[in-house]
Length: 239
Ligand SMILES: NC(=O)c1ccc[n+]([C@@H]2O[C@H](COP(=O)([O-])OP(=O)(O)OC[C@H]3O[C@@H](n4cnc5c(N)ncnc54)[C@H](OP(=O)(O)O)[C@@H]3O)[C@@H](O)[C@H]2O)c1
Image (spheres, rainbow, N blue to C red):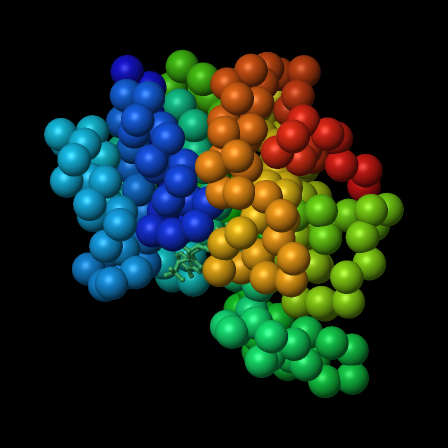
């Protein structure tokens, strides 16, 4: 039986990863920051139907202590796929806070929080759960980045979000080099413009399609793919 850990597991893309992996018989460690609230109701329902194969764990990407606590709880447990999914674009509703991201009116507290969530947390997760990944069979660390982090493919003027994704993609590349001799595949994904809370402004991709595309690629990744930056449909994203 394979095991996946998913962050930001209570809604959107993360919730769908939980649904699909659980549906395929995987053991799922579903992490989210508010395990009891309305925002995690669907996740709790999936867990209740899963007969013990899905567990919900409290984890806030902005609180490294909470990451360390869950890593300690799972010490020695093999994790085949570590899925860094949790992320923020900035304060929501996004359309009411666009000025915080735009040159001339940048809100540096917002930028700080976006970088800590989208860039620091995935690497902290990898540091804390590396032992689990090494004990797994698949040895994969997958991080949700975005095409907006690419120099060549995008010039969306959202300073906070875009730079956080540029930085995490670079950090994933560096991490992949560090982990090559341990046979760990580390790579970054853009899930497409997906119809989630975050995917405003003409999102075209259905959540199940994005996740199914990424899952099929994750299943086939080998060391030849480590360090790569890919879209859910298989494209390689230009830096
Ligand atoms: N949707 C798109 O078009 C798109 C495009 C490119 C990349 N992405 C990336 O895909 C990933 C998933 O996004 P999504 O579209 O599913 O967005 P979403 O619906 O807004 O879901 C984001 C998830 O991240 C969680 N999260 C945010 N801050 C957190 C924190 N401090 N600690 C723990 N969890 C936290 C949220 O939890 P709460 O419910 O508690 O807020 C939620 O579960 C993100 O990394 C995003 O940047 C999405």
